[in-house]
Every structure is written in structure tokens, then in C-alpha cells.
Length: 218
Image 1 (cartoon, rainbow, N blue to C red):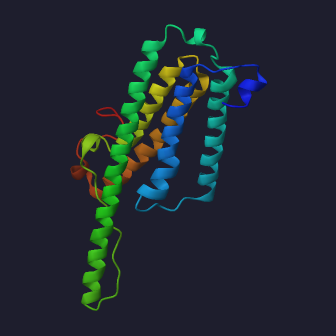
Image 2 (image 1 turned 90 degrees about the vertical axis):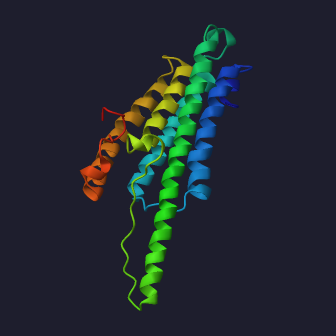
């Protein structure tokens, strides 16, 4: 955003380019810094291969989106003309998805905190009885927000968020389009697998009519 325009003789990028760059940065400020370092009470272990693959994708994705915004997409105000409404609606959709993402993430964080407190109480009760600490990890089903109808609303909100981002850039924003497609195709199988785990762990009666990631559909 600072060096590539100069290399291509671009004096000043349009405000819309900076809006998209800012939204992208806000998401990853939350997702990559605030959530794992300050907000999450705990994190499950992750395989090195999975971590490496995720890091590689994020670097490639950020490079593609950054390149499109800095030089290879619309770089003049004229190219953005007539798209004000699309940009404004896209920003609202992005904001709704981000806020929904944060809300449902926090519901999961509260589940972890409550489960940790419950597990600690059980361990202390066993210690008082002189028994050896042998308490299974506590699992709970989230109940608030969209968790009432699907088990992975944070996935759905992520898709909504990046669909809004794509809407701002327009149908011709190939990096944003590919990002949305990648999110849906990689997260859907994980959501379905997670739904099966919930059913096995808690039973079909407990899960009820909840779907995995799309209310009433999947």
C-alpha cells in the first residue's frame, strides 16, 4: 500500500482502497492478536503442519489482496464511480459479520471459562476426599445467539463478513472472491465434522434441530 503504488507510478490511492485495507487490518488485529493473546482463556494444541499451512495461506492471501488494493485493482477515483451504495452496504455487511463473529467467539470463550471452573471444583472436591485427581475434561453445548439454531455460527459470521468485503471490492475483486470461496470450502467440512462430534458427545436429543453452519439447511 506504500511502496507498490510508487513502483507503478500511482501518486495517490482512492479512499475506497484504504477502506478495504483498514477493514482487513481490523479483522486480523482481532483474529491474530487480540483473540489468541489476550481474550482466549485456553487454546487446543495445533499440529505443526496445520499451523504452517494456515500461515502460508494467510501470507499468500494477504499478498494477493494487498497487491490488488495497491496497484492491480482500481487505482483511480473514477474506477470507483457509481459504487458508493455497494461500498456502504458492503461495509455494513462486513461490520455485522465481524460483530457476530466476536459475539459468538465470546460465547465459546465463556463456555471454556465455565467448563474450567466446573473442572476445578471437581478436582478440589476429589482432593478433599483424598482421592486422586482424575477428572475428565468438561464439555458444554453453547445456547445463546445463533447457537440456538446452528453449532458453528462463528463460521457463518466469518463468511458474511468476507462476503461484505468482496461486495465492497466488486465482483471483479478476484482475491476477495477467492478468499470467500476458500473459507466456505475449507470450513464447511470442519463444521459438519464438528456437528457429528456434538451428536456423538451429547446425543441427538440434546442437539435437537440444530444444523452445523446454515440454519435449516446444513
